[in-house]
Image (tube, one colour):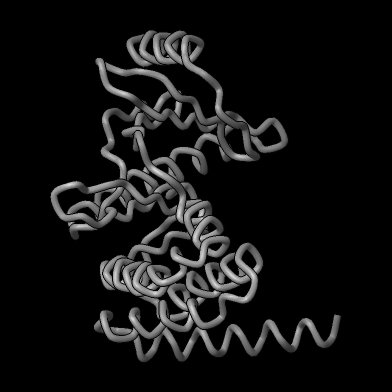
Length: 236
C-alpha cells in the first residue's frame, strides 16, 4: 500500500510540472523540487509488452541510468545530480542544468562565427578526455550526441564545464566493442549534425586515445565498426 501511495503522490506531483517532451521510452518534465530546479524523467508503461516483462525491463533501465550517472560523478565527470528516484513510478528526479547550452548549439553558433571557430578544437579535445574517463569506468552512454552534452559556465576558471546528460540507454560494459560502438554512434551523429567537421572529430579521437588507458583496443573496434558500416552502405 505504501508503494501505491508513493506512486500516486509522484504522479500527482508530475501533473504540476511542465512537459518538455515525450519520446518512445519516457516523458521529460521541468519544474521545481524541494526548492531546486529539476528535470524529471518518467518511464511509462508500454502497452505492447507483457506487463511483467515491461515492468522488469523498465525497472532495469531505470536502475542502469541512475547507476551510470552516479558512477560518472564518482569518477569526477560532470553529470546532473540525482535528487530522488521512485522505482514504483519509474521516475528519476535530476538537477536541471540552468544557464547551460548544448554542445550542438554551441558548435553551430561557433561555425557561423569567424572568431568562435578557434575554440572548437579545444572543446573537441575536452570531450575526448571526458569520454575516455567514462569508458575507463566501463560506462557505455548508449546515445552520445552533441545534444546530450551541455556547456555550463564556470566563472572561477573562465572555461565552461562539460556536463553529460541523458543516460537513459546507458549500461556497464568492459568490452572494447561496446565502447567502440559508443564512439561510432557519436561520430555518425557528430558528422551528420555538424557537416565538414571531420578534423574536429579527429581531434576528439586523438584526445580520447591519449587520455584512455584502454584506447588501443577501443579504437581498433571503432575501426572495425566503421568498416562494417561502409560495407553495409555499399550493399545497400
